[in-house]
Image 1 (cartoon, rainbow, N blue to C red):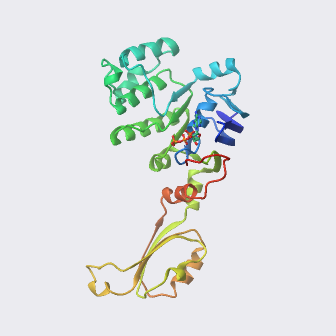
Image 2: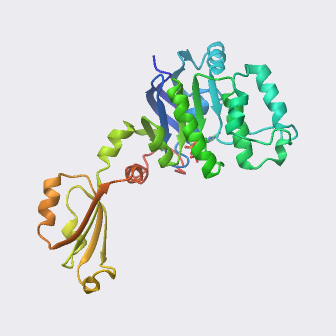
Image 3: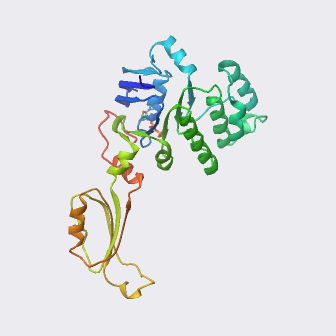
Length: 316
Ligand SMILES: Nc1ncnc2c1ncn2[C@@H]1O[C@H](COP(=O)(O)OP(=O)(O)OP(=O)(O)O)[C@@H](O)[C@H]1O
């Protein structure tokens, strides 16, 4: 049984399909990243599987419970830690009171330990908190009952880089403890660090569901080559070449004589290596760098595609 099982889940807001026939499974114990541009449907999906809004059609089971059944949903929620995209609090109360309220409601297994890492000023009124302090309080409240499944909507937003790193390290540790983590994010470096699989959503539809490793291997190589000749972009417009950029050589301080001739070509390559070598053998290659393309290159390819028709205004 998967921790989250979504089958043809659809949420129609009337003028726009928030999510459109989403189907996927998040396995027990995995860290799953949910990615997509603004307005793609990530929050809609999360709010629907948590029962904050009912699906228009399709079904979902979370920790084996049917999310459209009120009683089953209540049971499932006890074992879920949910961190919303923009946590909302009663601004007149203090963090400490919230802590004690949530402790009474759901139990407190580990707030002391969490507060060593995430440090909101508990005795101040929440109204005076910075965005980052609110986020840290929300993290502690979401996790203090030591849930089995963590569902988080852009969990590091508002945190400074140090706290972001700490949070990512914390998630990796939760994973080692056997927790299932599902989170949406725009930050690819954190996704690359901790996720085993990702789902990419665009205009309400799932456009990719893949292991991060496989995505990276499909992302190809980043190639920068300097040749002695002048070249035109058309010469390099061959199968497997993406995002080609061509420039006259910059001044090379080590060998200034090269500055006024030749060209530097950069591109991402997903084709056959022998074809690339054959192509390059036509030129007088003076320098070449080939490295792993960053995950960003892959995502930009998905994010940059023409939006699919979602039968309404698309703000993606
Ligand atoms: N309550 C609502 N009523 C009507 N339309 C909505 C509602 N909530 C979301 N939408 C629309 O549904 C689509 C998906 O929005 P959603 O907030 O789920 O995207 P998202 O991927 O979480 O975006 P972001 O990364 O910007 O947070 C958008 O077109 C949005 O305008």
